[in-house]
Image 1 (cartoon, rainbow, N blue to C red):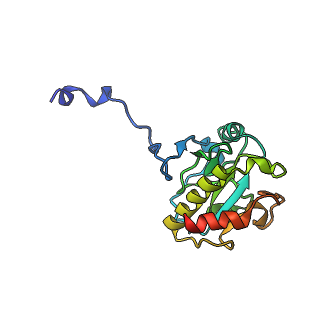
Image 2: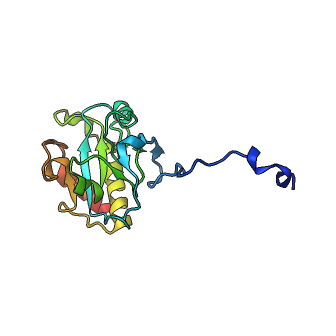
Image 3: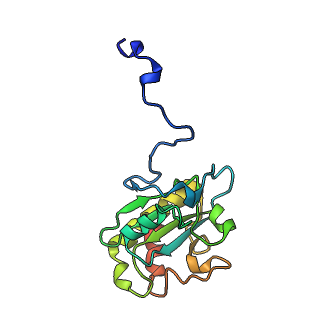
Length: 183
């Protein structure tokens, strides 16, 4: 009853268009990309989700998050996976369009997952990174009915028109896909 006496003008308001900082993948931390680095959407209603694109950051986990939070960078991914322990940060909600693939059509139809490391430093591709990423990819595939195969779980280098090479020749696709299939 005491709250009923408090004028609504004194209660904190929710900014127009604000969305709760709730992650789509249990256990992930919300580390929002700047709104200048992705497109708000209502997927899968506005665009079907058909792919998961696997990336390698070419920098550290912390630096990748900083890049996504910098409004001048014009880049983001839905998730970043840390090398040491497989910890996952979500930067863009799955229903929104992250700017990760370098191809607008693929951006609209995919979830982008960045992995801490460099394409020429396979030591960053730890068991923890592979395992947690595979669980994430499998969960995304389940949520949106994406087949768990290499035609739908692709490397950034496989996006048409890209000049990227990630995740690189040291990414163990056979091992990763086995983990995804059993997750």
